[in-house]
Image (cartoon, rainbow, N blue to C red; front, side, top):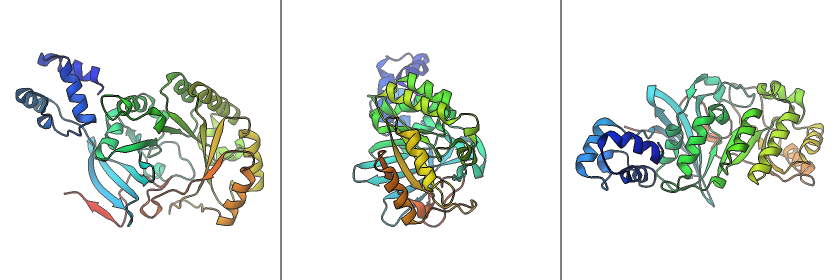
Length: 337
């Protein structure tokens, strides 16, 4: 809850308004997990709040980690025994949290494991922001690139951004928050009007409508000209470049004609391109291109576009881009007791 919402919940307790700020700050900046631990509150009030409410930080059910601990995958248990996965990535510039916005996904992208587990529900704002709070570490960046389609849970995603960016809490600068989407055009326009200050990443997969529909089924509803117009509007409204995420799949979208189409479509836009070699999923038939093919594709784009190859961390623990799903990981899981 935001401070003004906490204030409303505290109204029956007949306490000063500043108590709401103390509660918010204790949870979001101080890491409080129980009202009895909020020592800025009077003891009697702490007891009354603990009897009436609980602080709903997601429970860590399991953790998978790499040997060097650069990436850790957290399995969080939500109400109703729903599980979602979050990835903590430690880099030179600090920790990035890759958070989930839904338990499962409805969109069926050809390179993603999440839809294989079905769809349960959208997460509440507190459940999304709570993934960051539950890491108990100073997170520098947040990317909404975990399970689910963030813009399909628009209201809760936007509220979770406000929670994470609130100056009385984590005070995470919005420019360090990236919301991803498979390309829900009306909601990209809405996000542009929101003026949150966040960055936007769009899954592209192909610069040809027919090919894109075969990889991203949602593309049948939103042709590329409409998607690119929405991206241009967001870039203008936000003052930041839009990132296009392009998952490279061997024999499907990694050819010379694909590179030419990308250059033609994206050159007029203020954008950058992340090339992401497909991360293997056992139930999916695809594979990543050979390194030489990736290098050629990159070299073809580089003179015309701002482009990088993004090597996803956490592949060995199914924590890389496209590998999260509604189940626990394999080896390396530490069970919480």
